[in-house]
Image (tube, rainbow, N blue to C red; front, side, top):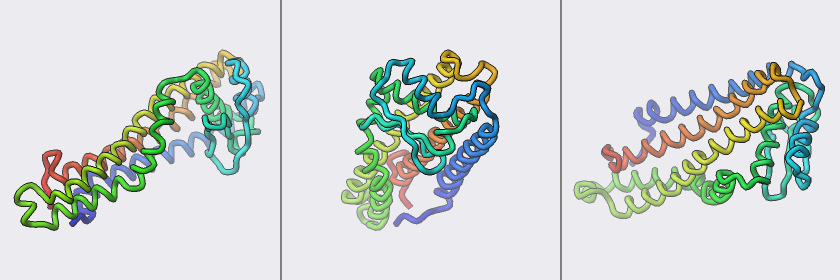
Length: 246
């Protein structure tokens, strides 16, 4: 039966917590730092995002305010660009960076950026994988380890099927997170370039925007690495990656 072993703690839990914690701390600290740095030209987050949309000829995207902090997002389904309160009406470098990043997603959508389409298609199966993938792998390993007679001949067939189903579902989550990386990096790169070209900030001010967006990107990297470590660990525990069930 599967129990969180020392191997799981050392190989998955601690690295995942360290990566996620470091990424979250970096985002919050840089956002807090550059929220205190006001832009020279005084654009708010909402105005900066609107300026990029206008420059791209996008007229069917609504910019709305949402509650919370760092809850900013672009919804391609209803073409809504949601900016949080610390971003929407603020003139800080951090607010402009976050807002124009989300505008970058809207531009991706308008220009049919391929990776954004792939990510959208993977959303339903990734949701299922996040809910049931880990449980399927855990139950599969437990069944394979519980049947001693079957284990001697390669493992319980029932447990193997459950494990494989869970691993496939969880792999879809990993694939979704992998596809998310170029989507997020591309949106940030668009924002970094366009804020200067559009005259929203000066080249010198762009350094702060780069630091805020680079930190935000690390949260997606941490999420993918954490999920990948989980998948590899369970593949090892199942015996499918050279390990053994114990």
